[in-house]
Amino acid sequence: MFAVFLFSAYLGEIFLLTDVDKYFDIVLVTFLIAVTAMLYTFIPILKIRPRKITKEMVLQPIIGVVFCVYTVMYLMSMYYNTVPNKFLFVFGGIFLLIFTLVCFLIPLRNRHPSNVYLYLIGGGLLIESILSFVYTYSMPMPIIATGVKIAICVHKTCVAIYFVKIEKIRTDVDYDEY
Figure: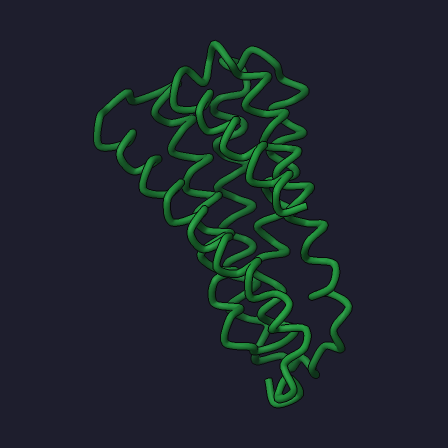
């Protein structure tokens, strides 16, 4: 699954950086395949016994979730009329929200040190997606294109590190301490 993720993500990013508008369908289909592959790799982590969640622990994730949902929904409404394939756009936005929420909520279930990468993975993908649409449909400024490329690099690096450590997370003998 990790190979499927890497292949589809890199293929999609080649088309993303080439011309999002021209290759819109290819970018979104490869994005959906990559996100599905990443969500599939989270299944073993989600099966780990969660720790007790208190009211105090929930405030920050709720604020983050509200911010992510608001940002994605606002941008989707802003760019809805300009995208070539509205169905894929909405479907991709839903998958982006689901994936980001999973990345932000897994660390709430447990406090393994490697889970910090999940924040970077979810945030990197969110920034990459948002900036690419802003660059393509609103402000084609070089600084925004640079931001997209930096977000891609951070996202891919953190994904690679985290997915390599998943087995260690699942088999960590001290895991119950987290």
